[in-house]
Image 1 (cartoon, helix red, strand yellow):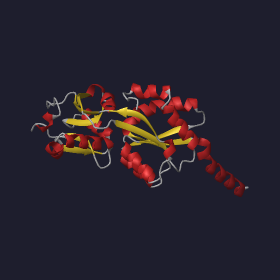
Image 2 (cartoon, rainbow, N blue to C red):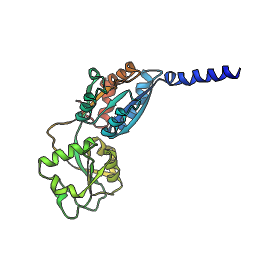
Image 3 (cartoon, helix red, strand yellow):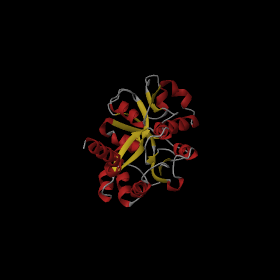
Image 4 (cartoon, one colour):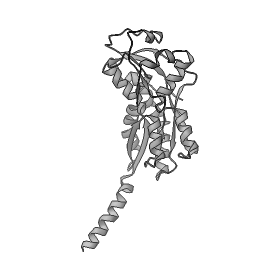
Length: 248
């Protein structure tokens, strides 16, 4: 009897992950609010499927996937990271789609003491702390560095930069008034509410474009494909637009 109970428990333990119908989505930190609102809408339209999100900077997420993390869908804040994933055969390339667009902005704490009025004013001696995503692993940092190198500002302010591990970390610094200014996406600045003020949008050679794809090792590619289809549907697009994302 005891052996039967143990065997039954083992069968149930193995079956639970399948019965749970969990779909794991690793997504760029800037998608946190929009994807969280999409969760109940998608789950209602797909009974039996539960979305589980993992939000972080795109670089670390890719590293997790590369190391074998059980992920079904990957949504990156830049094309380079997704290109790297494709180059390592980590995604189903046929499923890859661009689903949203964003903008890079310079923002300041709404109650900040320094007077940052434009990009050039970051060179002022009074400005000592500037939040920037780490260009090595965070897309917003990569966009920032490329833009500032082009206009000759990177060398002038790089010594003042506080490197962050995600765009949301820069936003947190801004919201708490711990830095004089920071570079974030327009959507993140919007989420900062009355604690954050946008100074100006930073021109980019290429727009901030978000690709999404099914992971090659996903055990539920059908559901993964449905989530991507949902994001590009009128209902999903409406949620993204609500949080400031533009159509690709």
